[in-house]
Image 1: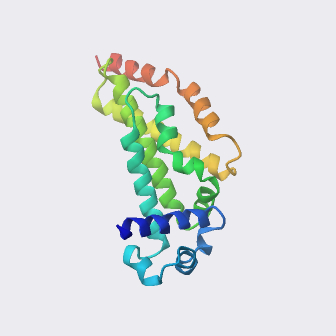
Image 2: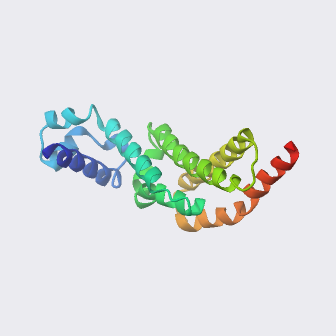
Length: 188
C-alpha cells in the first residue's frame, strides 16, 4: 500500500517543482527532501527525474486514450487527453525548453495521433474511403495539430488552450469529411 502512495508523492512533488522551476534545476535531493523520504526510496521507484517525467506522460496518455468517447468531437477528445499539459502550463513550458523536449513532442504527437485516428475512422464509417487514404488524412491532421500546439507552447502559452483548439476545430470543420469523400470518389 505504501508503494503507490510513495510513487504518487514523488510524481506530485516533481510536477509541483516543474511548475516552479526548469527541469534542469530539479534534483532527486530536492524531491526526496520535500517528500521526506530517503534517496534509496526514490531509486527503488525511479532511476532519475527523467524517468518520473516519462511515467507521467505515459500515464496521462493512457488516461486520455481510456477517456476517449466515440461521440465526442475530436476537439473535446484532444482537450481531455491533453488535460495534464493544459493544467500544468509552466511545467510544459519548462519541459519544452529542456533537453527532454523530444519527450514532450512524442507525448503530444501520440495524443494527436490517437484522437485523429479514431475521429477520421469514425467519420469514414459512413463514407468508405480506402484504409490507406484514411491513414494519410489522419496522419496529416495529427502532424498539423501537434505542430500547432508546439508553436503555442513556443510562443509562451499565452492564449487559452480551449479557445485555440475550438478555433482549429472551426478551421478543420468539414474538411476531414470532404477529404474522405474526395478520396472515395477518386478511387471509384
